[in-house]
Amino acid sequence: MKGAHRIIVESKKVKYDFTIKRNITILTGNSGSGKTVLIELIRDYRRYGSDSGVFLSCDRECRTIDNEDWERQISETSNSIIFIDEGNRFLRSRKFADLLQKSDNYFVIATREKLPMLPYSVNEIYGFRQSGKFHNAKQKYNEIYHLYGEISEERMIVPEYVLTEDSNSGYEFFRELSKERNITCISANGKSNIISCLQKMERKKGTCLVIVDGSAFGSEMRDISEYLNDVDHIILYAPESFEWLLLSTDMIPNVRVTHILEQPEEYIDSKEYVSWERFFTSLLVSKTQGNPLWAYSKKKLPDMYLSSKILNAVKVQMKLIVWNS
Amino acid sequence: MLTIIYGDAENSIYNTSVYFKNTYEPEWLESELAKKMIKDVDNSDVLSGECINSPVLGQIPPERLSGGVKTLLLMLNESDKIFNASTCGDNCAKWILEIAKQKDLTINLRHMMSFGRDTAFEIRVENGGEIVHSMRELVPIANQYLNEMEQE
Image (cartoon, rainbow over all chains, first blue to last red; front, top):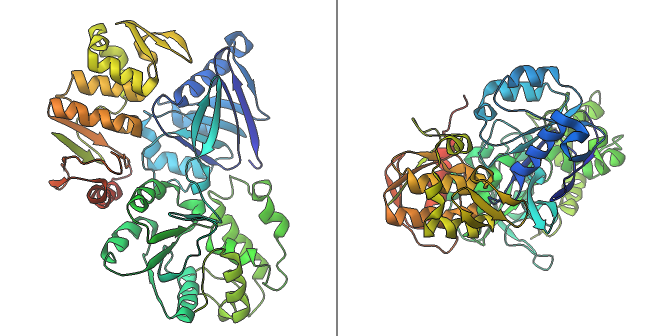
């Protein structure tokens, strides 16, 4: 499934109106904010249609799934939006992650549980804000230019050391960028190691810039944001992915994808790509293959991507961050 | 004292809503602490042991309280059992600490619950036996054990 889909669910007492645009959306937040009520209304509508007294509007079928027979239900459902409430143990199972990966459905999951096996985006975690009858979905984590932490438009970020989630091409690139500033760049070797690496570096002085792939970092966001609450010298930079950043420069020969980057959801098929990060990697690989100088590989970064032209273009994309000494 | 088991906990009750529906007793809602929790978390008033007045949903039975409040009521009344407290939002955290002041309480957490940036507390983390007093101390430890949680 592709595209953004607006969902309106209304009963006499409550109304929800929100839009989803990726295969995984997480509903989280305070108790009593209306997550379960939403799913119950969709379940009632699905069972009884307009007899339920619920109004539901969406250009795709909306349905709910719970513990009973969930594998068959997911396998037999296509091109739909599937809502799952908390309390379903299968959310943590390998089988569910596998089914989701191959599914052409979008999933909306109400849970606070940490689910690292599901590659969901930091941008698709929502909480409901209630105002009278209306429940508005609001992004859980506020950002400016993909930056999280103690940030403002007026405050420039001058990194004194850099920590990357990536250990391959992304790390190679930011290590080169860090060299220009004569600062250290370390790889955490994976998203789940970020906090333990920060702990080890706790005594280092100055601002630490942590760089992660936002489109698959959702499961870690809760832990990191709690960690950032207690420090003001660590800033998280979470663009969609390193490849997205390279594509955004518009500087790679014969790679013109601005129209895709403006509305990725219109181009990314959830059945083909479990996360936008994988799509952007595939896009960069396919657009550069056959070019002996620019053929992109996630494992080893070709030298052309370390040229001053690309380094400078990425610096421009990373707004509010000062890379020049 | 509050004890937390991060990740998988043997014999814990995972789906607290279903457990509550089949076990709650009307008198659970009539204690002062229960009324305060229901007012604070769900913004609702207890009319009787079987009826709550919600500003959004009108008069509702206890089964339709939020998942978080139902879990708090279970902790308050069946503190010998271990409940999945990841059914509770951060707005329940102060009430978990309050219940643990009254009686020893062990909970299971499968996410990073915030007990408050400036809140001082004493929590024992069962996984490794650590005693922590602030979120600053708790976050790295909880993160480590949550990362060890296995896929089923």
